[in-house]
Length: 350
Image (cartoon, rainbow, N blue to C red; front, side, top):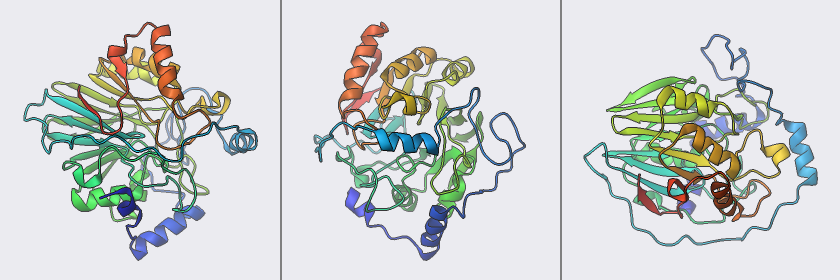
C-alpha cells in the first residue's frame, strides 16, 4: 500500500464527527485521572524546570519573519530490500530500519516495533494544505512485517498520523504505547489497543518492558487543546539492552535522568532536524549540536539521527541536519561510528 492509499482511507461517520470537533477544540479536555503534580496542574501538562516560551505569539512572529530555505519538490528514495517478517528468534539480535521522518522500524529478535508511524502525504489537520511530503517512504506499508507495538511520542500531526494508525490497527492491532490523553484521539477513530501512560510508567509486551518517559516539548491538534495531552519519549528494556526513542524534544536534563535510571541504551533514536530559527525552535526541537550532547548524556552505544529529510517544518535546508551533525560530532569528539544516519529504507544491525 502506498501513501496515496493511506490518504484515501475513509473515516467512519463517528470518526469524521470526532475530527471536526477536535479541529474546533470541542474535544479539548480528555479525561485525565491524575492528581496534580510537577507536570500536571489539573488542566494542562507542562515541562519540568523553567518555563518554555513557545507559544502562539512567538509562532506568529516566526511566521511573519521567517525566511525558509528552498526544498526540492520531490525526491525518490532508493529501492531497498524488504524487511523480514521475523528478524531473529534471539532477543539479542537487533535490526533498525529508517522509514522516514521519525518513523523507524526496530526489530528486537522476533518483536517488531514502529516509532511515530507516518505514511500520509501531508502532516496537517486537512489533506489539501500543510506540510507536504517531499520524499517517498523507505518501506511500503504492505511490506511492513507484522507490528507488535507502536511507540507514539505525542499528538502532533507529523507524529500521530491517524490514517496510518487506522491502517495498522486494522491489519495488526498492535499495542500503541503513548502519553496520557492521547488515547482519546485514537479511540475516537476506533483504535482501542492503546496504553496511555504518565511519565515513568511502563507496560510489558512479552519479554519487553515499555516505558513512557519525559521529553521537553508540547502537544495539541485542535484550536483549544494545547498541552492537554502528554508528550514524551519512550524506552524499551530487554534482557539484551534497551532502545530509547526521544520522540520530539528540546535538549534538557531529562537525558541525564534517563541515563541515571536505565543506564546506557544500546540504541538511541535522536531527532536532528526541524530546528531553525533557534530563538523559536530551540526550546522544543534539538539541533545536531543538542543531539550530540543528548547522545553523550545518555552514553548511548549507538545513536541514529531521525526527524529530518521528509517534511519542511522549519527554515533550515533539507541537507543541513546531516551536514551539521558531521560537524558537531567532530567538534565534540564523538566517533562517527557511534552516531549516524540512514537513508530511507536502509537497515543496519544494532
